Amino acid sequence: MPIGVFDSGLGGLTILRVLRRAMPNQSFLYYGDTANAPYGDKSREEVQRLTRAAVERMFEQGCDLVILACNTASALALRDLQDSLPRSQKRRVLGVFVPMIEALSGARWVRTPQSKGQAPAGRRRILFFATPATVASGAFQEELHKRLHDAEAISEPAPELVSALERGDHAAARASVTAACARALGRSSETPDAAVLGCTHYPLAFDDFRACLPAETELLSQPDIAAASLARYLERHPEFEDTQGELRCLTTGDPVMFGELATLFYRQPLRFEAA
Ligand code: DGL
Image 1 (cartoon, rainbow, N blue to C red):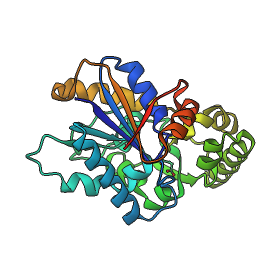
Image 2: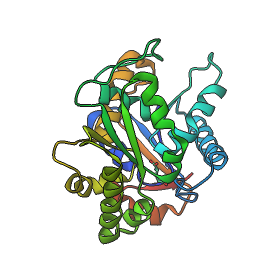
Image 3: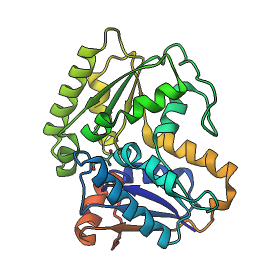
Image 4: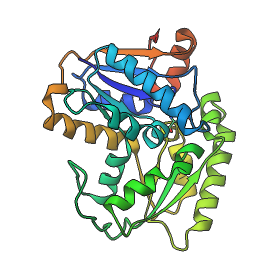
């Protein structure tokens, strides 16, 4: 029984790569909605409709657990999907924000916390970089404040970054990162304690973000956080585990073209099938 990993396109392969390295015996089904990407400038309704269609397809393919690796889908569609899943069903859909907030706070919430916590000293001022739709949704701040009432988040979109990274245009990617960091730092009255890259594509520009942010600002890696969080989830829910170590990759776009492009994100070739 594979665990589903969903992304709007190929960016989620940065997460899949780390998941597979951390859990080599676990089977995964990757689904990239490349025909409809990017999601980062779509409306909430559109992202909900597309994400629901993809998750249903992954359920049909045998996944009982689906991870929305896509931050935009996690921000705009996760709650809607979770609310519509009958509690009696074994199927689960998880997003990527709660693991990031757990990593920021050093605490773990198995369920929604009853009381609000305090951000640890040194993790109070947080920069959050994401797509325009994710930033506009306010979902990260909402989840953050539910759990850490005194944390202060400055969210900044990097509008051209996803397309620059997909084109492999390093100069444009660097320019987008430089501009987003300058805007975010300009809005922060003090040196930020931590920065989160809230988009599956952004790990490809990790070094550029690192170079543009103060050395005191800790830069968190979403793929590592997602992998650690899934490993803990599987300890509590061994019913979702398997030991086949298989991988299938589906795309709504051209399997040959996206199989070749995937190397950029996965660092080795992958064979894609039509979704
Ligand atoms: N995968 C999306 C995310 O993590 C970004 C790419 C897109 O705009 O579709 O937010």
